[in-house]
Image (tube, rainbow, N blue to C red; front, side, top):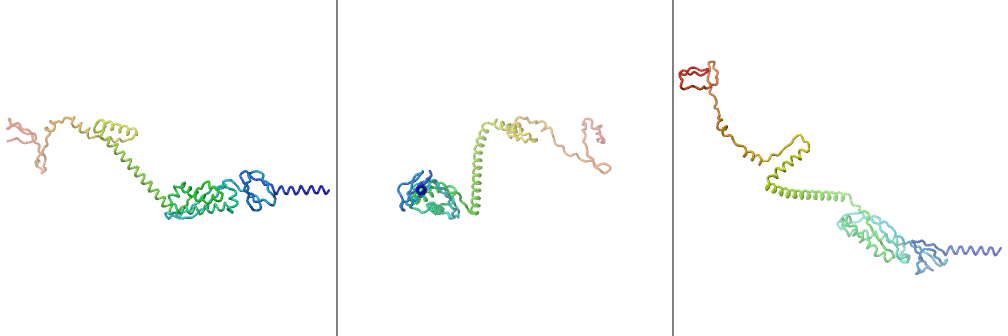
Length: 301
C-alpha cells in the first residue's frame, strides 16, 4: 500500500510538473522566455514549448496585424479652418523581444503616437489637402508613426484617414463655391458652342454666296423638316432674290397704265326743288348742232 501511494504521489507530482512546464504556442504567436527575470535570446515558435517550472516565465506575443482606430481629433488647419479628423492604423509586431522588453504596452503606445501625429498633420495641412490629397497625407502620417514604432519592434503597415468633419458654415460656403464653379463651366461651354456654331455658319454663308442654288436647296430641306411634324400652319420664308427674279421676268403693261385716267368729280346742277344733282355731260354732234338735243336736257341754242 505504501508503494502504491508513493507511485500515485510521483504521478501527481509529474502531472503538476508537466502542467507547469509545457506551454502551447499558436501559429500566429511567438513566445519570449524570461529565466530568473532575464530574457532568453531564443524566441519560441509555434507548437509545444518546454519550460523549467518556477524558473521560466513565458510571454506570448501575437504576430497578427492589429487594426486600431484612432479617436477623432479636433484641429485647426494651416488656412485656419476647424476640422475633426479620425483615422485607422494597421500595424504588426516584427521583433517580439523588443516588444516584450522595450515598451510596457505597445498597443497603447502606438495609439498615443497616432493621435499626436494626426493632430500634427492636421496643423501642417490645408483644408483642400485633407479633402482631396489624402494619399499624400496618409503616407506622411505613416512615416511619422513608424519612426518611433521601429524602436519598439513594431512595423506600421498603413494609415488611413477615415473622415473629415467640417463645420456647417464651411459646408454651406463650399456648396456655394461648387455651385458657382459649375455655373462658370456651363457658361464657358455655352460660349464655346456659340463660337463654334458661328464659325460653321460663316462657312455655310460663304458657300451659299458662291452657289445661290444651295440657298434654294436649304429652303426645300427646311420645308420638308417642318412638314414632317404634321403642323396645321406652315410658315414658309420667301427669299427676296426670288421676288426680284419674278419682277424682272414679268413684263409691264404700259397700255393699261397710259389708258387709265383719273376722272374729275362731276359738277352739280341745281334743280327746281332746291336739291343739287350731278350733271352728266353728253356727246354733241357738231355737224348737226342746231337740231341736237341731249338726252334729258334742253335744245342747244
